[in-house]
Amino acid sequence: MQRHEVALRMERAIGQIAVEDFVTPPPAAFAKGCSTLTFAAYTRSVLLKRTDPRRAAIVHTRTKSTNGCWVEICLFASLENFAGYLAGSAAEAPMWSASSAAIIEEFVAHRGKKKAKVYDDDESIAVEILRTNNNQGMADSHVFRRVPSTEWFAEIYLDVELSKDRWHFQWATDLPEPVDRIVIGAPLWIRSSDG
Image (tube, rainbow, N blue to C red):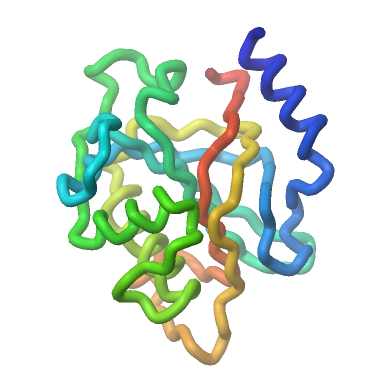
């Protein structure tokens, strides 16, 4: 079966429950959209016991719902899943890692079911993932591809609306742009005509 056929079957089976506009209150179990995706490679933490390769990827996009809510979406996957988006090893950006990588990876590995040890709640880990992603992962030197008008479908591990009175970000320092909702998960499929 071709990847396109798999994507169509998956969307037919669970597409009706996938959030696309983000006017639906969290949490979403699945989400989908069509937007510019940014791909960045990173090095997984050596602190976690696992058999999978240390090379991984973060996929990021940003969208605005019809009710004006700004949503940041961070999706984690193995770098090997993006062979179609890499034009060989020369196109890969330098790998990076962060001091919070082990905690973030453990959270993602457990699909958000196991609470992150040093973070108070879901909002805290979501903000840490987004900050790490924006301040390190999406720095131009680590991005290996930006693809406009890309369709994506993802399983969601964490979906939170941020408490307005709790977070007082300094835009362009903590985060580059305002955010109301953070979504963390893994891509089930990604496709684009720019492929």
